[in-house]
Image (cartoon, rainbow, N blue to C red; front, side, top):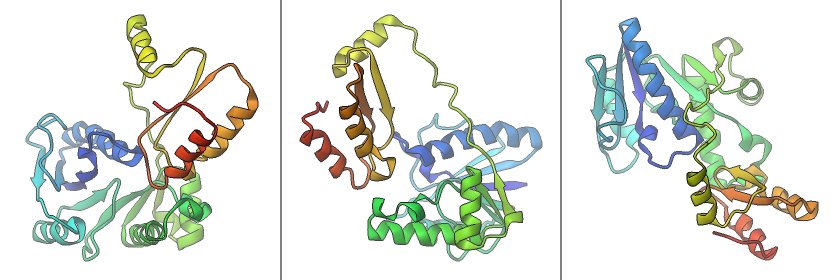
Length: 249
């Protein structure tokens, strides 16, 4: 069996949660595919680093750069030309014109519950892409039972084609024991123990403003350390930090 996978989101060097999901899942699928006698055909919109994924006769990389609308034009053309037995998109959307067997992962429908955390264009895209993935795919993978229930509630997706598969844990996420390394990082960012660490993209839907206000009111002895790259609508979060005269590194 040839399993096609949209690997375009796994190439990012600073990966978000869904991009990390794609990267680690593909890494895990490669040895499983080899054991089962399947071939993985990985589609990229740019040349990936040489060491991104393990190589072998059961892994085929298809690099097909395209300036705009890569998924619905260039990837779709490749899939029509050489269709795999099944196509899987772990962190993106199924090409509009592709009608062969597909599987898609839907990570969450938080935009239905917190629409104010998104711009109008983002809401439109999330609404359309999630509905399209849910209705077009042969099977849907949901990150959680809540996501499964939301797919049924908002888009009336057949429950029989939804599978709840919980994400795993990155084995590299282990406590650091090297004292010198810990000290160097704390000094670099001006952190003094004890401290509370929040690590994620800075977005309104993460409820960071409430976290910051609660921290200020709590009078706990800990520092609050917020780490992560700026996401959409991050400015109100940064404004709140400056307004409360908290430090930014």
